[in-house]
Length: 129
Image (cartoon, rainbow, N blue to C red):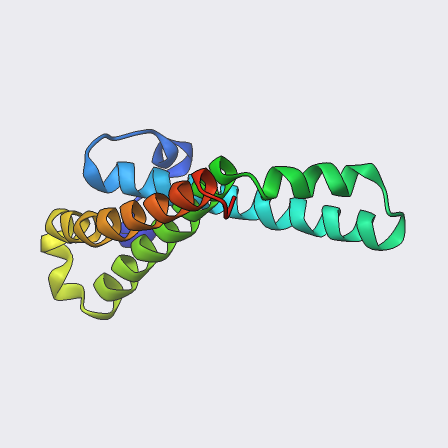
């Protein structure tokens, strides 16, 4: 009940706009990271304990370049958005510039992610992949 508001389940309703989209992407990328780490634990455990084909199959998926692109998107977006949130939490006077902060976040994220995707695809298409 922050600021005397009773939000309840209506707080989960999509309100639109950049900040809500950033919130939604932050949550989805967190789920992607959790699924990746959980799958990694399952693959490692099954390979260590049983030497099973399940772990081998999961590792084959992990080594594919398209999966690496997806995981890298999740990690990089979650990290840059988390950094934006930390900056806005540490300096609350910048909250009025939240939309501009989102644009700065994308301006930092897109070149870094684009270069990484280029390197991953280039490596996959040449002898490295």
